[in-house]
Image 1 (cartoon, rainbow, N blue to C red):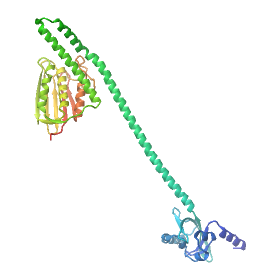
Image 2 (image 1 turned 135 degrees about the vertical axis):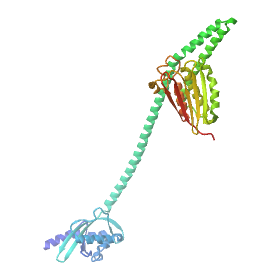
Image 3 (image 1 turned 30 degrees about the vertical axis):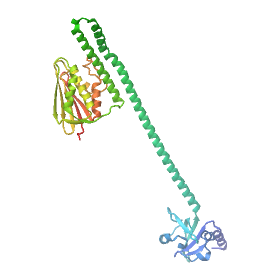
Image 4 (image 1 turned 180 degrees about the vertical axis):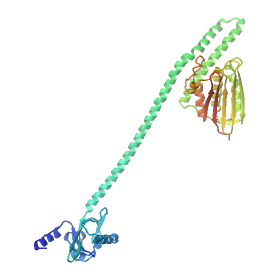
Length: 399
């Protein structure tokens, strides 16, 4: 190396703005530049001849010796510790982050490693600050996302609730509309009967006309009962739709309860019609006695209405350990398979009963009352061969 080259190297070595260290194959420091001395707070005499580990925190010494051995076996210029956080330690014990690049130089005096060290503490601090900021931003985004998700879910639920409310309002509006339409039709006949019978009664003033007056009084009573039944059906549906039906469970004797109901239906029986009742199994059941009464009365009312004169209507109750089954079988017109699919819909009436008065609400009410008491309703029927309705309750056993 000529004189000018030595001068250039000396200027570069002494005035470089990064730490430069030269070590031999044994890992001992042979040269350090002024910048490195300033970085670590040592003097030339304190470092030259010392192992490189003097500038490395003690916890990394064993690993660094392995790295030195590996580098000596495969020397080449490259960055040191790729993907790792490297640290230096000053004379005062203060650690700081460093970035190291290695170079290899061979002379007649042996092989030397040149290490270029940069203090990257500020950069690491900036990276950590950026990382913390990113984490904070991610947390904020997660919070906002969660909040937004919650808001979206609330909006979706509100939309669902509103849609359900609108559907319910639509159903109630339809119910009122159908009521007005049906009432104007169904009320006309009994009201006309009441009006005409009342007028005729006023004409029968003689004692000999007593039986004629009785006949018209009976027609008035029958018509009023018919109107009452229609209104009760609408009131029941209205309470069901508004969720105002409360189930009140009590323990009671099933056959005794039903035997009290049957006489109330005598006024509806056609000429020589007969209700035949039979009970099987245990006597006590835990249900809502009032709702069960409505179900039985509706079943019998339909059977009476759609059965001919002199027909027998068979009513059976059967109690097992966990079920109560009410069966009502008539000898009436029967129901087509097509109509059976719509039997429990509001206002539905079979194609073969349009000439018989009714609201088309009875079976709908039966199904809803049964559902409230964990029950189901099924129908078995053939045209002109009668109909059998079966209501099965999963009942609570009395304590």
